[in-house]
Amino acid sequence: MEKVCVLGAGSWGTALAMVLAENGHDTLVWTHRANQAEEINHLHTNKKYLPETVLPANLHATSDIAMAATHAETIVVAVPTKAIREVCEKLTAKLARKVLFVHVSKGIEPDSLKRISEILAESLPAENVEEIVVLSGPSHAEEVVLHHPTTVTAACANIDAAEKVQDLFMNQFFRVYTNDDVIGVEIGGALKNVIALAAGITDGLNYGDNAKAALITRGLAEITRLGVKMGGNPFTFSGLTGMGDLIVTCTSVHSRNWRAGNMLGQGMKLQEVLDQMGMVVEGVRTTKAAYQLAEKYGVAMPISTELYSVLFNDVEPKVAVDALMMRMKKREIDDMKH
Ligand SMILES: NC(=O)C1=CN([C@@H]2O[C@H](COP(=O)(O)OP(=O)(O)OC[C@H]3O[C@@H](n4cnc5c(N)ncnc54)[C@H](O)[C@@H]3O)[C@@H](O)[C@H]2O)C=CC1
Ligand SMILES: O=C(CO)COP(=O)(O)O
Image (cartoon, rainbow, N blue to C red):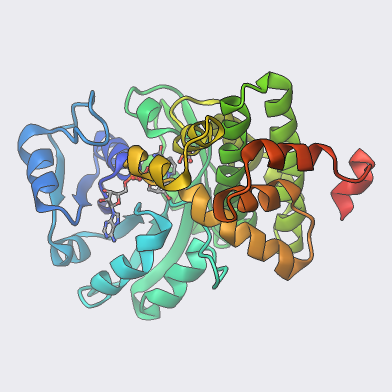
């Protein structure tokens, strides 16, 4: 039995804490909201994020970051990308030992263009970090808490650390693979949210399944082009954290990014959509990062670029789709190289 702390009691942090507690680990979930910690401890629910779920009685919560820092041999970071630096800062002052860090957030920081493992490495004291492992793949919290079969990947250059995380989480309904390609796994996990927003938009425009299949396939092509240029293994992008996650996020009703895109496609403005969601839609900030990364690495990312113009330059979704369809003629396979 390991002592594990999960930082963030949104839908994903709570679902993963539930997996860990059910696996018999001494699991504590930290939330910055005291009333949410009380709800988890006394009612064994987290109604705002997982309204139908009863949490295991051995899952405990705290809003005291010092308690979270001292409890854990392993810390799972499950807050949205934009909160990671702030949470690390709070945690840093309280860390007293070396900890194995696992992150499950899917984003890239705009402007700095840092991946999450890079943000963690620069925000946490090196003497307190045993390793940083990313856990990613096609996995909606809503299905994990129902014990529906789910597969994910734990990635770290140090494969022993990835295997340790595999052992922590793996059970009959939650299957964990390992990979040593952190760049490929993080890029796939972050950028699929961009394509899911676009898929939601075409569904909101009632463009049907041909359009969605095209977005998934050409989306994977541009994610792979960028990811390989950044140093990722090309095979990672056809795995669980690439194609797998792209499929689930573009097709599932649980997807926050698809739902947000769907509202945009139906004519709502971005701010209205975000106000209505009440949960993190990582793809919005990641679209900005993708646009910047495409420029930085000189890689063609037409879907991300058109989505950027919809989200940040007020271009009508239909106009953006027309622009994608009317691009210069291309060869399908040659195009993958540029
Ligand atoms: N929901 C899901 O099924 C999955 C989510 N993810 C990723 O996990 C990450 C978290 O997502 P969700 O749990 O869905 O988000 P959420 O919106 O359900 O919850 C986010 C949680 O972070 C907390 N938070 C926000 N700002 C904070 C701050 N400054 N300090 C401390 N806590 C803060 C919120 O109070 C909330 O408890 C995202 O990067 C997402 O892409 C990954 C796989 C599945
Ligand atoms: O990453 C996810 C599923 O693997 C969650 O995606 P959404 O944030 O779009 O809900």
